[in-house]
Length: 108
Image 1 (cartoon, helix red, strand yellow):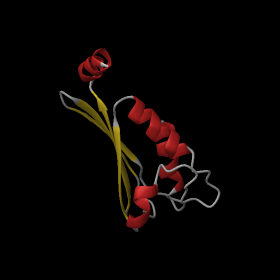
Image 2 (cartoon, helix red, strand yellow):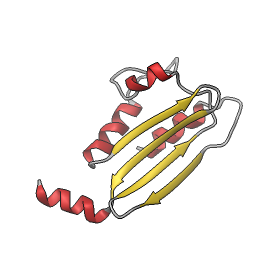
Image 3 (cartoon, one colour):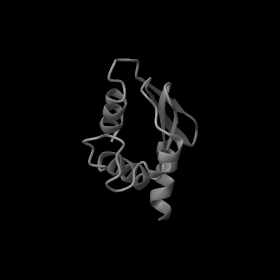
């Protein structure tokens, strides 16, 4: 899941740039921020990211982010993508903290 998102970020920087990964934790969630200094994604396309067979890449299949998003949702998490043209993209993955995930699994 993370490899695909990191790979997307790296591919968005054909001339190079910095890709950072930051992990923070609260009592209820673990947040993973993946930031790149790529070309950015137009705002109107962001809602379509993760849609089956939709890709912003010429040779993309539109499956990688869709599968990653499903894995995140299957673990009761969320994925949020923000982007600025010419400045890069941030992907925020929030997953329940261990205690929270265990409670969710027991209650289902």
